[in-house]
Image (cartoon, rainbow, N blue to C red):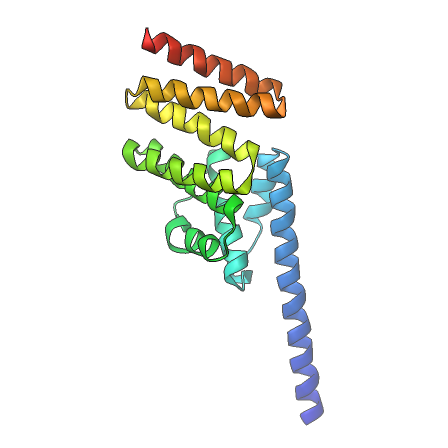
Length: 195
């Protein structure tokens, strides 16, 4: 009887460990698909993760950040919004600049969609600080692009142009042709608004 109980406990521990590894592997795979801009594939895989299988704050923070990010990128807006209560505090505590930049960015994006422009600008600036610390050009580019857009919406055309120029500097650094077109277009719009 005692032997059966020990075997049962060991089996539960092993199964639990495999499940945790499996969830972490799935999250890593989804992050990889997202990085490759295969957003629909990433979203499908993410939707297959059972939230009850998330066993620690690390998994939960990554999961909810991905859920928010992919929600916006695939037009499946996430209504749970765990950024403020779970994701940002976790990444702050762990000094994870890249994920923190993404969390602030998507929280800012959410505010921009709701028309809360001052809060959006503040969050985009927080994202900028973290993206600079992470030395991540892709993040910096999307943050500068968003700062340019939010300043356009609020009539701050000089700042709109300043951030469009910063985005162009990033583009020149990484030599991305699509981004070059977007950055030049945004600069042209900003110059046009300034007269």
